[in-house]
Length: 155
Image 1 (cartoon, rainbow, N blue to C red):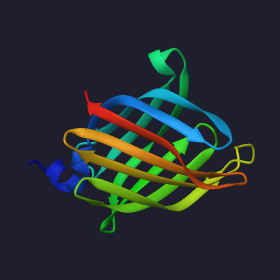
Image 2: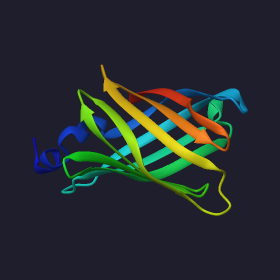
Image 3: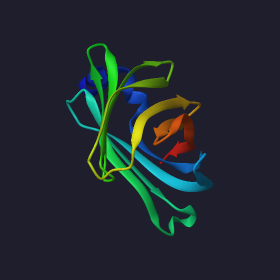
């Protein structure tokens, strides 16, 4: 174990590039599927991972969504800081227990022209060499509802 592993602690299980597929659903849109690549990049000597997610339609025919940020240790907990080009920034906080990171929203801000998203919750799980996540969203008049699920393998 090197010094970066010590700094990352429980975050080191997320480090790497992951590719996979997911599905989305929401009461106000048609169900869909997508391909995704997530990078949790080690920053040598730092107690955080740089985070980047990119999604495409099946077959990578067209880009769909992207977001960037950091997964970091903070005050005995873990925080995910995310910015999206659609006009959102979010900070979520949680704990990693046996490869499961359940995050609770601390802050969600949006630009004046962004869609009316009111809450986002995320859960990441690393188990048996795979990464998976689930995402819930409250949008406009729709209460917090499961929106995305995906499963990945490390590249």
